[in-house]
Amino acid sequence: MSLERQGNEMFQKKNRNQEKQKKPRVLHIGTRRPVVAALWALLICAFAFAVYKNFTAVDTHTVHETTVVQQEVTDTNAIESFVTNFAKVYYSWEQSAASIEQRTENLKYYLTDELQALNADTVRSDVPVSSKVEDVQIWSVEQTGDKVYKVVYSVSQKVVNGEESSTVTSVYEVSVYVDDAGDMVIIQSPTITGKPAKSDYSPKAAEPDGTVSAQESTEITEFLTTFFTLYPSASEQELSYYVSSGALPVIENDSYVFAALVNTVFTKSGDTVTANVSVQYLDQQTGMTQISQFVVELKKSDKNWEIIS
Image (cartoon, rainbow, N blue to C red; front, side, top):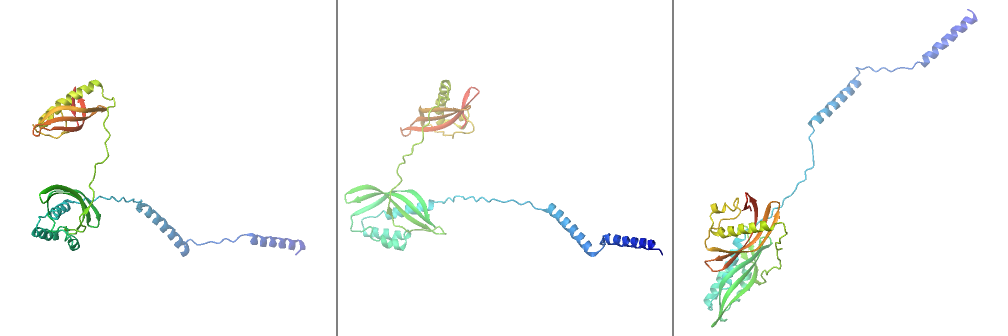
């Protein structure tokens, strides 16, 4: 073999070896292998679960709870009656040992044992004074503790001392304990106190604001004069000509005789007129002039005025 031929064969063999070295190896993973199947199964399950949660999800929202506190109204009639009966016993006695002893015995139904001992000598037979309760007035009942109520009351007593007599009015307070069964006992001795006084409050007086014309004012005054003249003795049917929907109660009392309208003030809003009016009536039974104050709303329809509320 010639040298040239040998050289060509060696060159071609070298090129084939280089091509084999440059060709990358490709790793083929079979699609049926267990690992791949498991991964596909996991992906499908995750997707199915996501779809299920989307359709079955429950909307949630924050609930803000509002607590409504209702004020409990306590019926104090029993407490008032208990204290009234106590006061009639406590402040009444005759000038005799037997009367005072009976008073002490009766107080056992109202006072604790401690208060009975404390009040044992409040009235003595050697003091020439007798007392009779003429009136007891309850001013207030206030809960001051668990089952404990403070009661303020006034007592008018006719006090007789020898040949002289006088009426004395005093104000006291006591504390009453009320158990679960409704039974009561006084746990504080009658203590001097003051009664509610007159308040300085004065409501703002109604004032005309020029919204009602002079003609309307005249018409309304004439209407109210006619109405209040008839009102005390009018029947429900008669009132229906002047008042709508029972805006004023039926009186049906012939003893009140109309005298005059005083201090009338009219104000208007839209087509409604508000009338603040005082009405003088002569009470034929007592001879007294009675003044009634009304605030009524009127509206004009078919050329006639009507009280609507």
